[in-house]
Image (cartoon, rainbow, N blue to C red):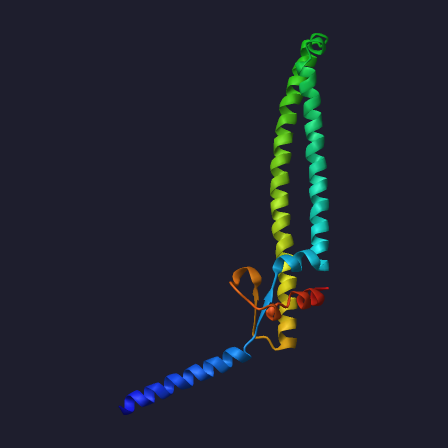
Length: 168
């Protein structure tokens, strides 16, 4: 009987202490997407990414126009009839090399954009992490987690605005 009372007392003490810890413990919740889109770092990285994307698109479009021009000449019987055999052969070689350049540029475009996107996210993630640590230490918050990994949180746990302010 004495063991049961001692065990019951220990369980009660544990429940009371864990309940009091839960009421004083705070977790900061951040929305990374919002930090990304609304912070100066995120906006700057997005602007740089869009410029790179535009530059690469121009490169690919230029290759495509040159290729379409050669294809148009090859598909035009009147133009082909006016060419010497050497000029027609040169046009075929141009078609082959432009086709290779076009597909190489498209693959490079995909690779560069993928790498730039990963780098962009990494930079913003690092800045968000640094800002989260600063806000957590200022607000005495033991843990900051992303909103997308949390099933539920109270609105008072959300520190996204404070993190964005710190990032800026």
